[in-house]
Image (cartoon, rainbow, N blue to C red):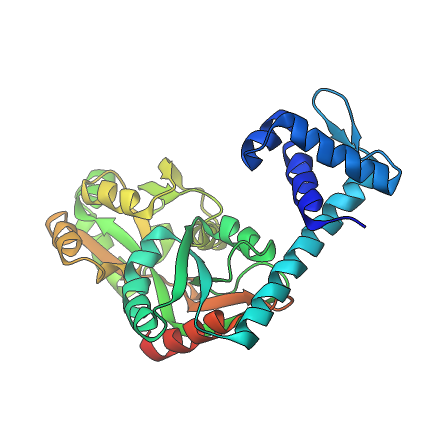
Length: 311
C-alpha cells in the first residue's frame, strides 16, 4: 500500500523532473528521495520514471502524478473537515487576490474576521487573475476575490459589490496627441467615453492575464481599434503613477480611486480625469469564488459571511 509520504515525494519529483531539485525542495538528501521512489516502484512493480537527463515520466508515472494530486488534496480536505467537526477554534484560511485590490478590500474584512476568530491563521496569496484562477483549481487557495465572472469551471461565486473600470486620461496626453482640440475631445469624452475618441493616444496597460487587461482588450476589439501600447507592467499602481506623469492613458477600477487620499491628490495634480466608458464590459461585480468540488471549511464560510456584511 502506498503511503502518503512516498506519494508526496513522488509528486514533487514528478513536478521537478529532477531528483536533485526535488530533494532540495523537500529538504532531504537525494539518496533518501531516490530510495522512496525506488520503494514505490518496487511496491507497484512498475517503473515511474525514465532515468534520462532530464527525467521523464513513464505512462504509469503520468497516471500516478494526476492521481497523487487528487489523493493528497482529498487527504487535506478530509483532515480539515474532521478538524472543523471536532473544534472550530483553530484552522487556517488562504485568500487569493491581487495586491492592489487587497489593499482596498482586506482592511474592511480582516480586522472584523480576526476579532471574531483570533485563532484562525490567515495567509494571502497574491497574483494576477489567471494565476489566482489556477491556484483555486489546484486547491492552493481557499477562495479568491476579483471581478466576476471567473473564467474557470466548477467555481461557485458570491457577489459582493458593483465595480466599474474607468478610463484615466491625463490632460497633457490629450493636449500632446490632439493639439488645439484637447478641450473638444474632453467634452466628447464627458458626453460619451468611446475609446475611438482616444485611439491615437499612447496607452499604459497591465500584463495579459489580469482581469482589467482582459476587459480592456475586449473593449479595444469591440471598438475595432489597435491601441498604441507604450508600456506594459504587472502592477496597476505603476501604470497609474506613469499616467499621472503624462506618459499615457490607462484603465483603473473605480474602487481604487478612494483607496489612498495621497494618491488621489497626485491624480488631481497630474490632471487625470476619469471617464465612465461607453461599454457594458466596463461594468461588473466584485465577488468571491470558491471551488464547488472542494470541501469548504468553516473558516471559509465565516470569511464569506463577514465579507458580504462589510463590503
